[in-house]
Image (cartoon, rainbow, N blue to C red):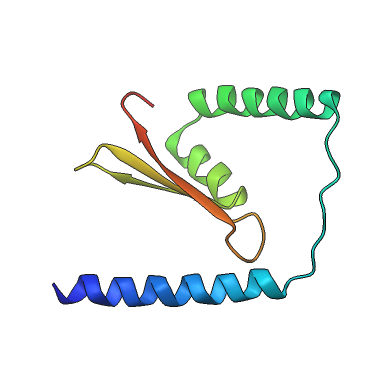
Length: 101
């Protein structure tokens, strides 16, 4: 399948570019969060989940856009692919939420 080999080449190229950028970036050790800071962050995320639960599709799209979060539903696998851009360069992504989410 020609599309697959192109995608693999593009993905490997992007991975190499990001790995080189990561290695070239100066190390900035993160200062550990306090228990109170962690509790506050979790509480704020919980509040956001409550807002999203009752938001219109348009409002959800606006929230996701401003949060630099891209969600792609894949109906064949019943999964959602989530990609977050925490800075100008992507750092992480996860996928595989199944069921009634």
